[in-house]
Amino acid sequence: QGAFCATGGTIVSGAMAERTQLKGFALYTVIMTSLIYPVIVWWAWSGEGMFNYTNDEGKSVTFASTPPVIDFAGSGVVHLVGGIGAILGAIIVGSRKGRWDPDLSTEFDGHSVPFCVLGTFCLWFGWYGFNPGSTGSMHDADTANLAGIVAVNTTLSPCVAGLLVFFLRAKVVEPKCLDVGAFCNGILAGLVSITAGCAVMKPWEACIIGCIGGLLYVGASLLLTRLKVDDVVDAFPVHGVCGMWGVLACGFFGNPD
Image 1: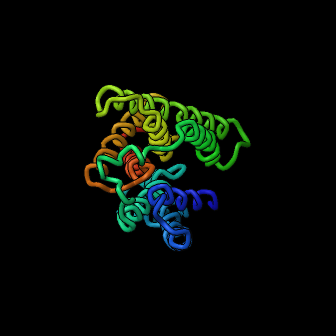
Image 2 (image 1 turned 90 degrees about the vertical axis):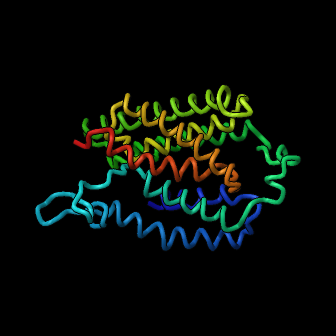
């Protein structure tokens, strides 16, 4: 939980990069990790919170007496929470100076594509601890098989999402170029999208979820640009929008049994 909590805080940093003082970010992180995240994780994962608790009949339900929210490894608890914090932070601190000046647009491109790619693959590698590690144990064949299907889904969804985003940026979305940065964010969008349901989805369902996650990422990223919200690393489209989709996808796909 310490790692998950820290992740929720780091998501915020990307959206507010390059114009937030350290003391301001530190305060934001303290509030996020000590007040906001613990409450939400209790609601979803404690077994007694309003999104998943056992009623008098011994059934797992939500506060509305509906089936419990499925969030196996944190699409909602971690990524959606961090994404909401990111978009609020980006709006509150405002845009970087000159961000929307057409004559200065190239000055805001990422300075190192290789570092971007390296960081993405470090995150992807870490996701194999994030998702399969959420099985909590591997002491018999059933838990080993569960961790295996989680790992497979954690591979397929980002592959599909990343390739789809790369294609859209190259052939559909202006300026129609080979956008490696967007490709990396597409991979992350697929990872976030499958995090909630990675244990209850079949591989073909993971591909569909990743595909839709990629589409949602591109749409949300373009919307923020149109609204002139300066989210430096597209933290909200990746973590907020795709985190929300990951939780909702468990209502359309998968079988918790």
